[in-house]
Amino acid sequence: MNDSNAGSLILVLNCGSSSIKFALFDAGATPLARTPAWGGKVESITGDTPVFSESGAAAETLTLDCEHPYHAALTYLRQRIVARLHGRRIVAIAHRVVHGGSKYFEPVRVDAAVLADLKSYIPLAPLHQPFALEAISALLTELPQLPQVACFDTAFHQSMPTVEKMLPLPRSAWEQGLRRYGFHGLSYAYQSQVLGEHYGDGARGRTIVAHLGSGASLCAMRNLRSVATTMGFSALDGLMMGTRCGALDPGAVIYLMEIGKLSLERVGRMLYHESGLFGVSGVSSDPRELLPREDEPPVREALALYVRSIVREVGALAATLDGLDMLAFTAGIGEHQAVIRERICAGLGFLGVAIDPAANAAHAPVISSTASRVKVVVEATNEEWVAATAAAALVHA
Figure 1: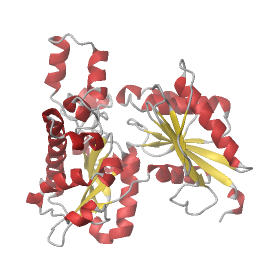
Figure 2: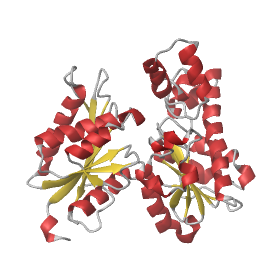
Figure 3: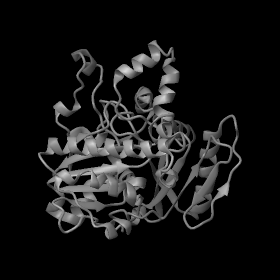
Figure 4: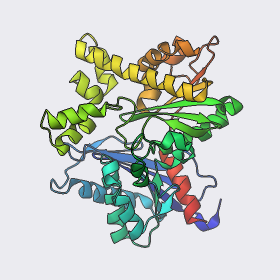
């Protein structure tokens, strides 16, 4: 315990387009405890019934300023957090920032110049970037002396070889910053640590981590460092997701704009908000709601396409690794949807993947069978702890 940090806290904010998640970590602990002292979230900020929930308490509905609901949600969270400090002080705020572009490869303390840089990356991650930056901007104005640290989802993938970062476009595009960046880096950074702790050398060979949530991607690792990933220049690429399309023939976009006469804004909304599981099923982006309705052909086809996209991309990444030793599932769907895991693994039998149905149904840490040539594991992610640890290191350096 560092006496100078006794009673101090690090606040982590994870801001999305309609939700804000927060967690408070005890800054006096070395290393930081992986479980936050307190946390919660505001959801459906732009919906009809915003909801606030926190650790150990029932959810409650909120009434937010309809003209500026996001700012109102931030103000509400600040009031709730201040009311719970009881004399303790926040020494830093860590933000999950999705895109660091080609300039920011490590966590960085944010000032006006850094904020201006990060705003230029909003078109690359429109679902997340503007909202994290709105929170940072408001806090810079209101609490300019409080350190704020941006932690980038793109940073973990800087270890990828150049051939994995390149896009088959004119060289001038590379010089303009068009390349494969990769995302979900805070989640993969946590997996790179915890898998090594739990499985030692068994995780340091040819490993693929499947981050399956409302957004989804895969990361191929060697020695627990990123060597390839499915998301590319933007968070639209790769796997089919909850509402995002994933990899798509660019000719389809040209067709929609030229023949369908759809505007850039309309196409963008379709690709980000109206595609994926939601778009194909016409029902929902959530497998929990889709699985009970598989008797409906569009729902059945949406789930089949979702699983197929994951199986295809695991196969492609296994080829870049020259085989596969470990497959790890994480994030909301990866951690909690046994049926989806079972279907994915069934499609990977050609790689030697075989699961134990009982272990899978119980969400056991290891779900592969003794006959499997690939160890298949389920591991919770902890992006907030990764961000808090990075902020602690910068503030106390």
